Amino acid sequence: MVVVVPACLLGAVAALPFLGALISRDCWCYQKVLSAVEGPDKAQANIDSGLERRRRGWTALILIGGLFVWQYFVFVFIVEMDWTTVSARMSLLWYHCVLTLQLLSYVRAVRTVSAAPKTRSSDDPNVCQRCSSFRTKTTHHCIACQTCIKDMDHHCVLIHNCVGVRNRKFFVLALAYTVLTSCFILARSTTRFWRLTDTSVWGLEDCHVCLGYVVAVFVCIGASVLLAVQAFTVAHGIGTLDCLQWAINYPYCKPALAQSSAEIMANVRSVFGANWLFWMLPVARPPDLPTERGGKED
Figure 1: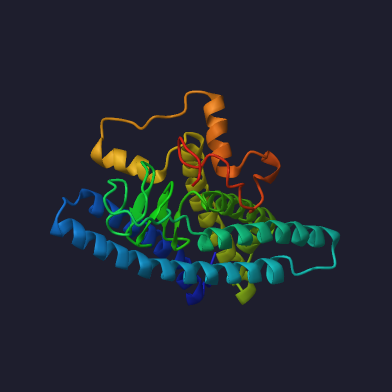
Figure 2 (figure 1 turned 90 degrees about the horizontal axis):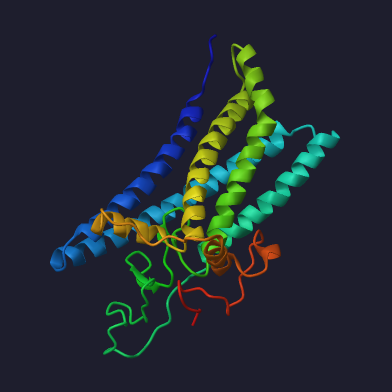
């Protein structure tokens, strides 16, 4: 079978490995900071890593925005182009409902900052010497955001922000709704995608459908992996940063994990809130709930 694939197909697919390279570089950069000894090398590693992360963050946001707009165009105006049928209308209704939740979760994850409160005290050993923030055992200084983040999970290049106490719920919801929308696009596009195997030469719309299917597969796999990691860390009340630090500094030890279902539910409520009816909605959790792993939000 002879298939004509335009150059734009290969160019668009290359955007996904590029995003993957950004994430890999981000992890390598942070590992370099953790591995550096105290002194000039440590300070320079912090500066270099912070600058690189800010540049990669804006690049990732632009790529994600472009992929989102293009994927929306392909699904709504090509895959579901026959809006007169009942199935297409119901499909678009469900798609736009989930897409709205996905966008709200992503925007709130990007815009919500989990910075630790500042203090004027300079003699307290729990005060960060770089940003004058009060630090607890789960508060870490982010070299990209240049401030301490409360209950820091990690600095995510995909949202150009740190995942912390105030936006971790939004980050997890954004991943969950990304998996849902990707699976739905795959389900609705599969019939037309396999129909292309009977065609020797593709038109422009066929190329968009094929590329949209491939992009949805990669996005679904990547978001599922990230969601699985977040589900594990949220359930056990730890952060991705904690796991990375333990793996580098204490390779033969493991962080403390939840030992019962009651502990798991308590950890989940500390992120999503006490009322399970609002767990899947991108709304902020009440401020009086436990947020520090072992304390309450200040």
